Image 1 (cartoon, rainbow, N blue to C red):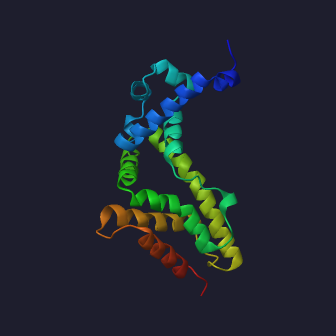
Image 2 (cartoon, rainbow, N blue to C red):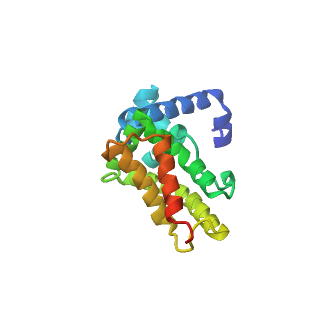
Image 3 (spheres, rainbow, N blue to C red):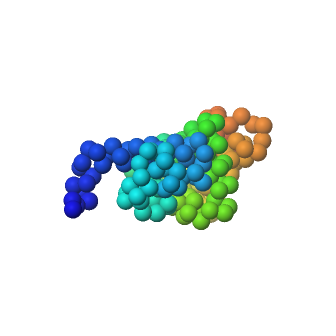
Length: 196
């Protein structure tokens, strides 16, 4: 039996993996995370369920891969410059783009709703939030060190405030959510938390 490494080098295996990832991403975008199951993905990719299980042993793995394949950018410490506004804009830009897009915004809303009662969605959501929060916390810590933010600024509450404002504008108000609206939230956050 071939090793895992040699299986991944086989072009047929790679084509099958790509078809499954495309199917999972399509289901996620069109029907939300509830549709991303081994059975649904296998049917959409026209492969057997056991083929999907061979590559993604859990539904969490499948959800993680689907989200990874459709997200615009993974936040990374290496992307940071040390300039508060620029770094906030860099890290928040993919979320802003997603919320401004009707299809992606619908997927985000569905994911939030689904997380109320689907533990596998909660697990994957929390992993992505943790990853995002770590980069955001670095931005806040750097800005506190450089004197751009007050020492009392709490990174977790700040993230909740900014993202909460984005979600409120997009889903619960008549405000048009776009780059200008997002920039205003970012500027308001910086202004409200600048040293006095």
